[in-house]
Image (cartoon, rainbow over the protein chains, first blue to last red):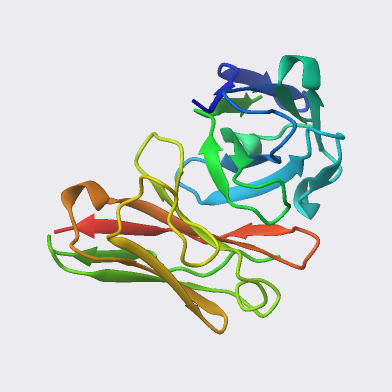
Length: 121
Length: 111
């Protein structure tokens, strides 16, 4: 069955970077868009960006435009989200999620288990 | 791009029906039929409950239904059950540079 498995929890210092991975299985990795969504403690979901695994095209939320990079390794069926210049407000659970269809507007029907990133000084 | 507006909380007794609203603008909810709803239990990843305004993914109970009127989308849960107690988020495609926006979230309590 379709599954997205993310890398483990991270503790980072203010100003550093973090790279979270998301390994897909059970479907053709290049077919569906792969999104990243984060959720700060007690807060709402926040969309960060997506990648099309087929050609590596990306689109980022304006808020994260200058700090986030989403990449993929087709041979490993894995996507990555790197966030730089970390600050305490970036402490959150980070989720990857894939779409129903290969379109930018398609809903997110499969989610990873989440990766907790904690940022402290 | 501001988050879509949802009521902070909605409650109901077992067996009742409740409706959660999700208000946006003509650039998102009102402009496209790409509204989705997600259920999130504490400590768990979100789960897709409704997509493209009113479609249910395979395996989702038909007690969940979605609709839209103008700039406001709605999720209705009928025959409320204890297991429906969770946070619910709407989401929409948007013409802004953000492309996708989530709602502020609604906590559903089963009394």
